[in-house]
Image (cartoon, rainbow, N blue to C red; front, side):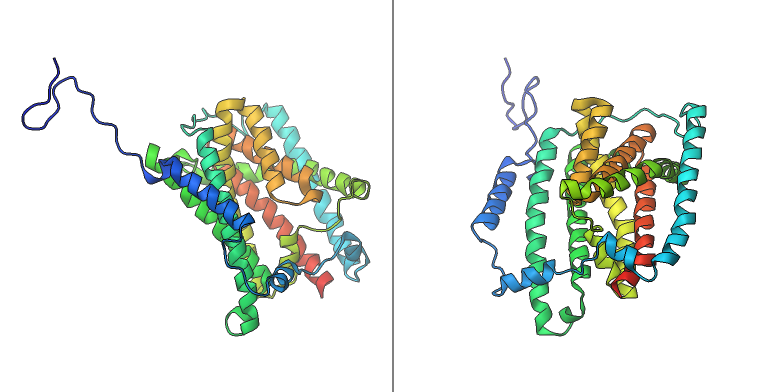
Length: 356
């Protein structure tokens, strides 16, 4: 018969007490966060600026230029000449690499590794989604007040709205990354290794990522032009992505800030979240192909750019495929950075001139 010993120690055979739940494991925390989000969204719990309408209009004010504007711009001929060389070069490189990969049966270019099973579940995805919604509301609140304070002069008046919006997006992504790392690391240990950041040969994997981007670029380019042709019939506005419009109207220093965010911060944060965390969890339930497709669709939708949905889906499909094949985030981070760098170079070459 199992009885407690006189010194307060449990008798042999008594199961050890369950460890207390960590804060991030408490269901009440997420119920409180969900209630806060609903209250902030519907009940006006967050005190907004007194001239909220003017602040929102200023935050949403961005110089619009359509694809037709670019085609009518005086610099279009020189850009068209450069594009006539650059685009076929990238297309030809991608098609050539695709042929080489097919001949090699995907063994030499993308050697397959054993993909590690993720120990986190759909409930963890729900926790992260709730935190994401709360961060969205808080950063929108912060941007509204930052735009409001621009009218008071001083430091805030010197900050372009585009820089404020991009900085808020980066802060939101980094905070969500810290939450995911704490959630995974607190339960399973070594979060960055489990989320795919450990790689003994990062440069080789990064090179594979750039190769993968060049291979898929022809398909992305064709998908984009299909949307340009079908856009009017689908009532999709033929406008560039808004972050690129923001970048085109910035000073060189502001453009450098957005470039750093696009080529470094965004690939690191988004790959940890979309591939390291989201894809790995979806793979438990839908298998590799289903998880690749679903994560690519979520990746495209959250970019909030209707004209770019097909190419963004193809990019998300490639990034998840690279993670599946290599088991490391080095390859998708490099491919993501290459795509963003290409987009920013296009903005630098033609967007700023169209805005002038």
